[in-house]
Structures are given as structure tokens and as C-alpha cells.
Image (tube, rainbow, N blue to C red; front, side):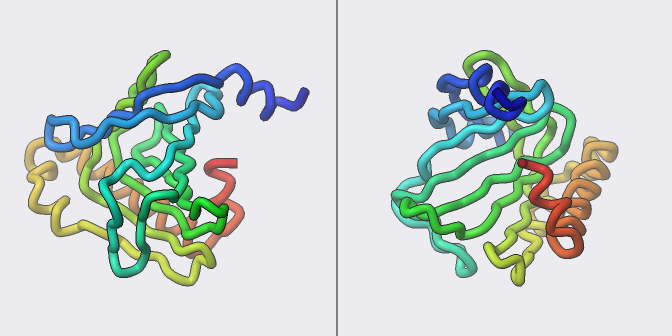
Length: 171
């Protein structure tokens, strides 16, 4: 058995993904744990939102499947988005505090910065920088704000310049 299949087998099961924003639970949903290598935990879940969410550059809708990657040591999460038929839409990257992972939960604190990377990588969009500025994090926790901006910069650089580096994050 390869290391990847061993990790997948050892990490199998169901967990609740809990997204916290501004100190409150924004959303909670069940996901199937795919792998956990001690730093990165990967899960898969159907679109957990209500109905269709049209961002203009992508639509999330019932039937979409998210393969989500969370790190205990990194300040972001990467979510691969596919249609129910398996067609890649792209990657939605959330800047977060490092994930807190237990046997039954993956808890992430959203820091308002996001990056969208289209399936063919011709579209890379920084999102919600205005929300991040308005959050007050730079004043209340300057170190966390700096780490958040560095995480967004790293993701954007990898997405724009290094296709192998970007996809290697979650292979």
C-alpha cells in the first residue's frame, strides 16, 4: 500500500467542519475525512450553502463537491471545487488561522481574505481585502494580520507563477 493510500485509510471517517468568523460559528457541515498526515487534513463535502451562490466569476450550487485541505501550521485552506459530474471549476482559497483538528471536528477561523483560482489558472482574484481592512485585525493583532497577508501573497504567487507548487500543496 502506498503512503497516500495508507494516510487516506488511517484518516477515514466523518468530521464536522466548523467555520468561525468574528468569534461566531458561521457554518458547520459534515464532511468525509480523506487523509490526515499530521499537518494537513483533507475532507470532501457537497456544497453546504443554501441554493446557488453566484460570485460573478464562479457559481457554487447544489451538487458541487468541495475537496478541502486544512493545515495545522499554515494560515490558509484550499478548497477544490468541482461540479457533481466532476468538472473542475477552480480553487477557493480562504486565509485562516491554522486549523484546530480533533477526532470529530476541523475548526478554522476565517480572516476575511480569499483567493479564487480558476480551473485553467488564467483567472486569479484576490477577494475581500476591504473586509479584512475593516475587521480591525491589523490593530488588534498585528502579527496575525501580517501572517494573513503573507499567506494570501504566497497563495497568489504559487497560483500565478508555479503550477506545480500550487497543486503540490494538496497532492
